[in-house]
Image 1 (tube, rainbow, N blue to C red):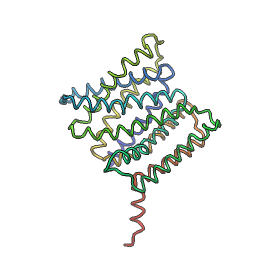
Image 2 (tube, rainbow, N blue to C red; image 1 turned 90 degrees about the vertical axis):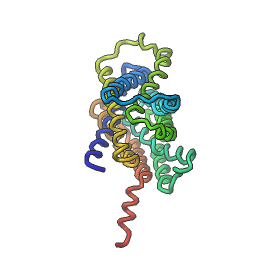
Image 3 (tube, rainbow, N blue to C red; image 1 turned 60 degrees about the horizontal axis):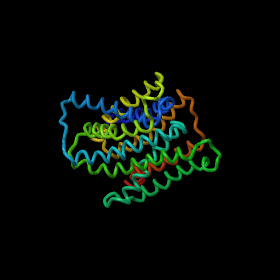
Image 4 (cartoon, rainbow, N blue to C red; image 1 turned 90 degrees about the horizontal axis):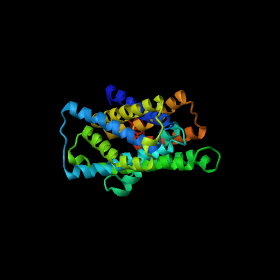
Length: 302
């Protein structure tokens, strides 16, 4: 990757790592579903302004809406709600570490439901290491040795499983010939339409107390920086660096989330969390495969 790609990759990791930090602040004043709705509505508005400013064409058709409606459910509605719900009870850094298991679930889902993306030996080893890391993370809590509710951990892992299925469904989007910005905008718009009645029925936001300025600013940062801007950078990197290189962002997100939460929220993780993160990291290295290829090339005779 070029220096520009690396700069964008690090920036993306900070933006997505920051989403856990911003959400943690906002959740002090807002319920999870209301926060999801605020995030996607503002994010969709920003992306709509970008689309209008660039004069981009708005495709129509039943296939476009139905395909992206399912994508919105798997990629936004379910995981955003589960992660924010889990974050009401666990630290932002731990939620980010659990989110890093997304590629592990993706390998399993792709192996089970596709014919052209079967798991290789490296990927299988990576999944095994990654899930061992999850066991290390969750084990002490399951035994009552850590004040970490299992339901919150399960919610975050459920979100990563939903992300994995969104990757499987996302294979249907490319044939539609949609631009990345339009795809992101329509996903967020559909998510807004789905979430609005649910939030009105469950949270009744008009009856909630007015959130404080820290929560308001956190919502704006979550929507504008960690959603709209992050989507634009993500799809630009997807085009220039490719999906394999984008996997590297998964290594960096927990680091930025832990640093932000530690510096500004005073959150501290147990040693088992860092041990689990290390095992998940090794699993991602195995799935990525480049380290092993370079080691193999280095041991070959000249």
